[in-house]
Image 1 (cartoon, protein in one colour):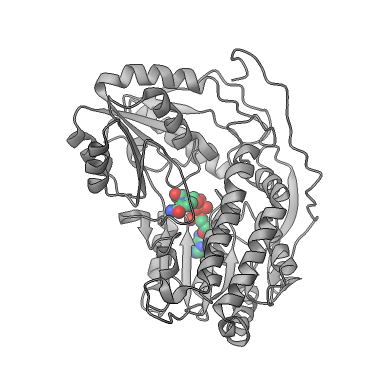
Image 2 (tube, protein in one colour):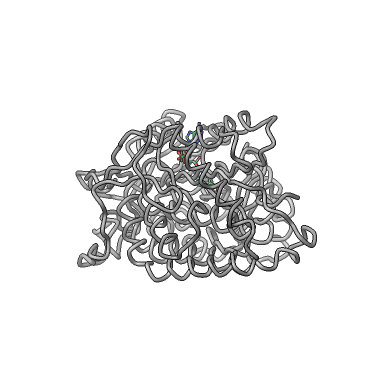
Length: 480
Ligand code: NAD
């Protein structure tokens, strides 16, 4: 890390485009408003520990006001517009996300800690693509396979995590609006800034007041939103633990629920796989976004006959990863989003060692300030180890081996989760055989962590239910 063949000169992205206010209110009914019963808290740059801005932890009365605004907008304007007119607004939002892409990317990297290369090339373009995609559905809902005139649900209460703040916002808001619902969205407490910038985009797009409302805050605000009786639909992305609580609180109400929860994906490499390509896929699978990815390939299952060679190549590759300033265009690994997440990664990694797995990281200097964790891999991991079963949600890879396809399948499916999986092999028939039997919502073949708005995404088992993206993503927001 920086000690490779040669060092790169710093290439920092300019922050000149970004204008962060000292403090923010809540975006309700088309305007930034002061809270009624919310309290201020600070959002911090995880790479420097600098305070970026003061935001509001919305209280129950604030949430109530936001839901009322969403209801009024639903009854008064949005549900009465034609799909074609809703589509026009969504295309406008999509274009504005593109126009403000650099600003949004810098803001995302500053607030989240992710490398600018990723926010610039993945998060923001995919967020725009999501709005473009669902804008296209708005006037074609009668052809989506849900009857000739599928109806919206009403007000959607949406709660999202911190790992892809703007992209998760797009996954939630685009299909909700396209289908004629209005929304109250709560971003994660550590990453509110791109959602607040998005509020400004809604204003720029002349979206009718109340169609999108953004209430910042932590778990209490989220709970007030999902439990609010004025909400018709709850969409949640986050941990399985909170997902369970929400499922309990929504049970017995008329609310429709979709949950996108955790994962512990198997990335399976067979002996006939192109190994250099697989190494890139493994790196992208677990070190993309510091491993803060619900569908991360956090369990590497490698066929025994190629395990040594693959691990040699993987370690050599990890030694070239650059960890540091998220705003540097050469950075591969940015900061861990919060001290709480860093603690969790440290704790589970320590448990990995205590349970007998062998820990390895490349030589790697961590910056003094900020929250950092080196890329780490564990070998000698067995199925019983906690690091093979629990989601670490960090840059930590657990390596297991197998001998036969049946054993690979058995190990891959031996998980309470079922969000994604990867298969690396030269044989098309083996890809199909595995894909049919893997209990995972997404199976990637000879690639990993690829996303496209046309492709449905979602889990089996404790990874949740419901699909986001594609035609399937419309269903969660329609009365069908
Ligand atoms: P989290 O569940 O703690 O928080 C997620 C969101 O829920 C945040 O906005 C938080 O403020 C809010 N929240 C917390 N308690 C709540 C409550 N009682 N009621 C309502 N809202 C509440 O998870 P996290 O630590 O922010 O995110 C990491 C987790 O999210 C990981 O487990 C990861 O796998 C999962 N995740 C899943 C997907 C997916 O698509 N399946 C995507 C990203 C992240």
